[in-house]
Length: 344
Image (cartoon, rainbow, N blue to C red):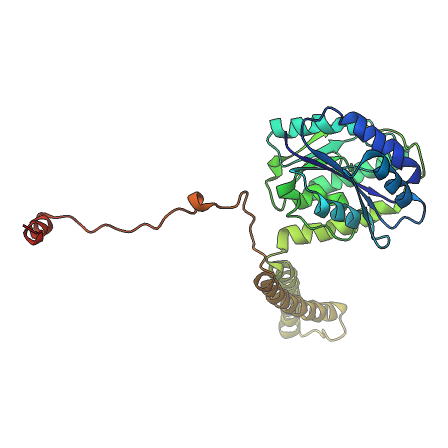
């Protein structure tokens, strides 16, 4: 059985620490491989850190505590836990006990059987307020339409990954909601699946999210779309906009020129004249921005040793192959010459 790392970001969850650790140990008591529990405190102002160290003394050093200097957000805390993880399989989950650790072993087996790189939890029977569930469903549908990853529940924190895949993804800002989409940038979308998991009502504390998160999801989605489609060719993104506006502005100015020359009408005071000039100027700005973005993109890939592709497995000596050396043509004259020159 492969080694397992469970990453749990925590912020102001002091009442959840001991119930969570106890529940994880209960559900993994029969796990055949090595495992560790990594709890990342995201600068909690309460006693979350103290409770974590108390739990570590009680349960052992396989409970690892990662303490951030201040509150950086759930995405940064999750990335810190993934960086610290040593297992071949990495599981992420919330620390508020709404995710059930009992699903972990089943998800690991299912991921291996389906030969996936990531298995996303689906809170089909979600224990949240009706308003929050409604906005969450709308956000999930929007993400599914914009991206190539078709899932029902992007926001569920209970996920299982192959460490070799998730460690190639770097999370920033508030991009933890789009982890399946970011994972799709280093593996095939067909290797990302989902499965129904349990979801419990919050027992302690209060939710850290409000309805304003829906609007942030829309803004983040635009960023995700740009990076996935145009990270290596940003000039195309700005170029499409620039060319489109340039064509429209040129059509407007051509029409006005025809009106001026053939109909003799005054066009200087027409709003359409100003719109045409505006479109041409903005078109030039977009195209120039695209050229600059292409230059920055090339500098990034050349100086950061980042490649525009990801290997599924590192090449070993056998996979590198050998050079093909063409053999000289063998003729009757060559054979006769070799026979004459051979020592008697």
